[in-house]
Image 1 (tube, rainbow, N blue to C red):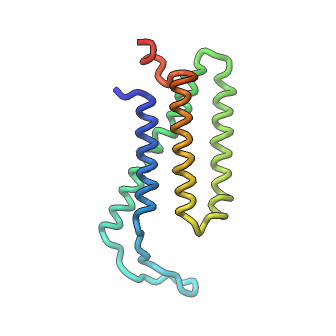
Image 2: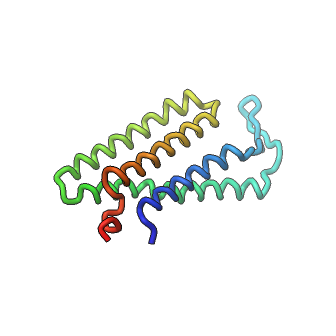
Image 3: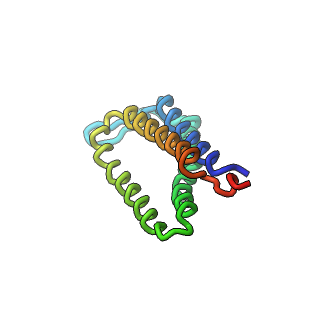
Length: 148
């Protein structure tokens, strides 16, 4: 059985692998737009189609844990406290802020996908380092494993 810390790290590695692979992959320009009309330049190759689905699956596997893992961790930390509801509300506040900030960043950096990916990689690294500090210095991510 994997520890919660190991799952956080695995999920972060999956998402960072996705971002690095997306940066390294030269997606073909199969269609181009001329005078508001899309024209086919070439047929998509089967390798490129497989790559799209492989990247989506890679990201989905990492993101699946990040959707439920942090709220579960907060609920574990505050299960026997009257601070559970404020902690969950605070987490949702930051999640909503993150969603809202994506839009102006997406518009401002629309022509710079590499910069957007690098920002996400840096934020992912900061998150993992913060989790490791939390696990080592504040409270264990796996309270049952720490007790045994």
